[in-house]
Image (cartoon, rainbow, N blue to C red; front, side):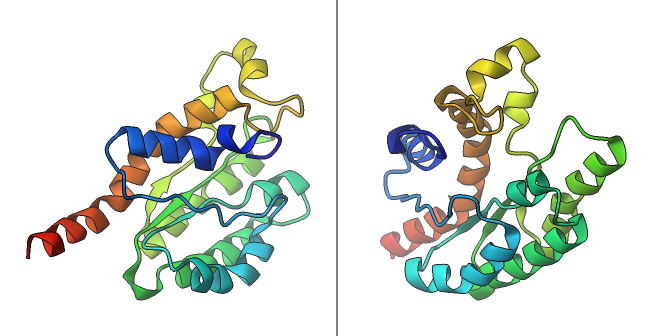
Length: 187
């Protein structure tokens, strides 16, 4: 939601998408902090879980590590590994959402892009490899409409595309929770 009115940000658009698809009992809670790095997320995850007591968790961190250029991929991976260990406590389902950079040297791009699939396999989480893929897959002449003026953060239209890609993974994430609720309601 950086740079956007709250109703146009990712949380609100994802919430609306889920409700429109019949998931009326789902509440999307934003646990993010603007400018957050994986190191900050690692420090905050336990308190965030204790405060919100979520049924499922979406972990989407690493973009600021990548953009800063000061956090090595191995450090980001170690931080995400610790976050996922905590997120998976109590058997919660987790969706890990990665981010990749399109315009850097190939070795650097690959080093970053490989983090998220490796962690998802290690922790048995669902995976969306690249949050920005729906934007990056568009012709470059569309990017200005899909990104804010900083050419980093998604515009409201870019967020809409992201939600169309992310939404089905979130449905997969919440399916076991909703099935469990339906079973308990039928008892």
